[in-house]
Length: 242
Length: 242
Image 1: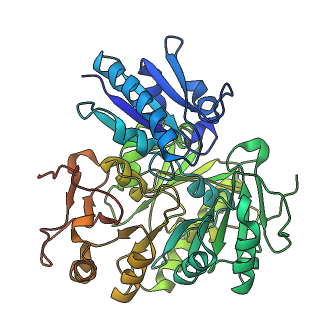
Image 2: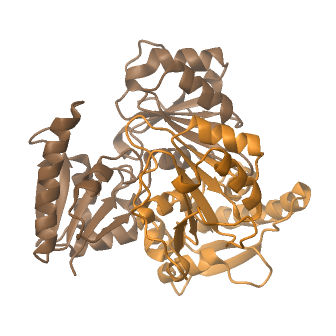
């Protein structure tokens, strides 16, 4: 029976996809791909391009990035209905999502909206923060350490608690929350224990640096993440300038 | 110049390696692999087997799993010295580690012990808890949620705090800490929100179940992990019996 596959593309480098994801993409009939802005080519699609066959039908669909849940749900329901019909007609269908499908992805909403009789399988991917740790070659956790992944959209208080309770903290989506994040890290005297990484694994744009000289008003890439390494010596990290 | 590559094998299924890791293994000259017990074949080695060339030299080395840090360091220093010499003589050298190299791996100790002039690159892998979330198809985090990864070796108090402070908590190494973990989750009324997964992605052994009927005295696999999903509806998970 035909199946629906949700596939994580990894953080940006086509070679950081799993072998399983790459092999599935070679043999499915239809590929659904999210298109953040109308008529712009998605990053996810450019990552998987080396693995696509000539026979593949690509259905680029618009997933509105708006805060209004109802508008989003209406679009997703339509796409879920179309996918369900494709699978029921015997087509193998894949959907691609950046990073890992189970880490901050709208994929899980889509999965919930598919018809109940559709068989689904999810193929994990390298999450951006996992890739970043390998880039700087500093472990997220060893031995009895614990780490947490926190979006910088939460309150100062919540960020502070996470940093106090864990050995390592990954702060996602920091670009629009720089003053708040810097203020918490300064208060906890952790500016020199924190690195900023932008555009993980999109090789033309990788930048990693400690944040001790970062200013509240600095503009940083939307794809920026900080890792607060409370227990590591960071002096080995070479600062890279563009 | 020759280089040293640390490669994550992913959780167990050979197809869950990255394309990059698989391609590197095809072309390196020497592969170092950990051997937990003397003369037993390592799980990591069996995962990468499909990608190894006939010309590859495999050096299986014993990494003692003892609590005495000095004994461990002595062994690792010897291996690091051997690796450094191999790379300096012009050989491309790889080392494989289960899951992701930056998540609870002894690889980072080895990396620290290599000679300073050796160029190193770390290739990420699918961490076991990332793979588990895809297996049960329940997201670790969406929107503004935060999640934490905690080894069950820490105190009851630390486990409770992590569960209270996060939306999702991954509890690693639960096998030898079942009474403690069950007691915390019972106290917080989260037994029905928690799943147990054993041997992720080693297809012959996967078992996933809610823990509401688990007893303190039950024997569970050493490779068992729990995920506490405070915000998810788990009733869709089909319990699997061996």
